[in-house]
Image (cartoon, protein in one colour):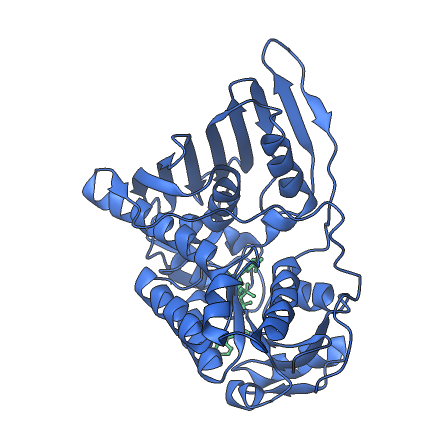
Length: 387
Ligand SMILES: NC(=O)c1ccc[n+]([C@@H]2O[C@H](COP(=O)([O-])OP(=O)(O)OC[C@H]3O[C@@H](n4cnc5c(N)ncnc54)[C@H](O)[C@@H]3O)[C@@H](O)[C@H]2O)c1
């Protein structure tokens, strides 16, 4: 296909798939074609609920020529394997976070996508929502002067109070750092640019946890990752951030503040698409609310941005080499490169906690461009039919 809405398959019909399917089905530039899961009844139920024509196992869905882009919503341990199979089948891939549990797996995916001339994207896309886009625009417009530092914290007693199958949150690839860290770190990179080095400590309050809700309630499962992480980040710009990620705190709290030479910005929860956004200028003893403009549609904005880039690439591909275009035209914002940098940052945080020293980040990254204020997911921008 080189024109018209981009054909999308969702692989992994679990808890978060409902939000993606709901959002994606409202975008005219996306055509939901198929749902797959290793549990076939889940795929069938999701397809039925959203009027999607095909439900099946992963190989059947990857065989479907109408599927151009795979949205990988499996558990973190399956991310690499499912994404690699999709790329080998010639599909563009957008994956939930983390991109993969380890940077080596992610690096192979980035290379494989580039070699095949395919785009790779990664969650979160919450930074494309109205709240964080307005924060990015406020910082770029100089509302806080030169950005100097950020303080972020996300703490709770963990997701087993509400998730029916929470064991994966305590396995490699999750824990508070790898599960919630991507929201905070992606927002920080979008605001400050790439991370240069990190230092951290990590702890684990309990060896086992218990499922609280659903058919598995009462079952105990092991905790194999740190559940309280404190990190210090230094950005290439010389700005810094101190960030706490915890599943050990009985005080649920979210905090995200950016301080600049002229004031402090209180940024909304980066795991949402909304505001509020508040500014406290130096010398003022009051917070002032700033306007929040943009989209709050939900998870899927990054997939749409990627789909539109795929069509831009398709039209350029008629005249240029496809692999070069995948490198040069990867202007979609929730990109594999961004998700990879965030994964490398989380890995460096884990290493620093283990060795007790600063750990440098290997590569630099250009932060994604802000979305135009009038960017409209509900507009049909991809018209025409396939040749
Ligand atoms: N639950 C949330 O609130 C939430 C929010 C944002 C992001 N996420 C991310 O989304 C992903 C999925 O989370 P979830 O909560 O929906 O998990 P889930 O356990 O509810 O669903 C995962 C689904 O993937 C399927 N699956 C697992 N391995 C597979 C494979 N190899 N091939 C095909 N299907 C496979 C499972 O059968 C299951 O239906 C994770 O990466 C998570 O970090 C979850």
